[in-house]
Length: 109
Image (tube, rainbow, N blue to C red; front, side, top):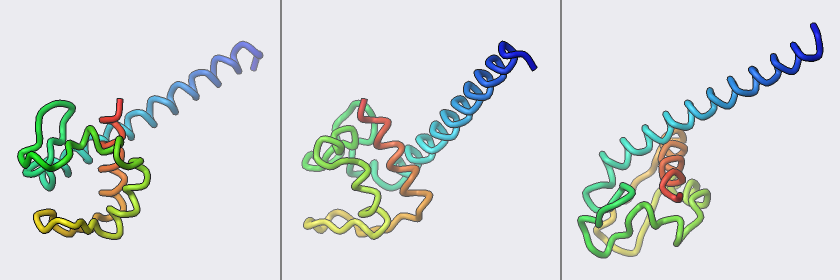
């Protein structure tokens, strides 16, 4: 194989890997959005715009301003406990944590 062919093959492999990784991340973001819609949207604004149904509840797009999203993963897995009674206690499965944090990260930009 020539050097030019090797470079082309390497570039193709890198492009394919990046596309596959981006597709997997997009799927996680979509699953995280679906989880948020089903479990969180009755209190939180979960999208890029809009206000939370409960005025005192933070919008998901602003959570990264309060907490690094990566730090929320442990709390989501162990069970969110808050000081106010309206917030239900819940625990996410490992896959759900990854999906929801991927979705939250997608709202940062």
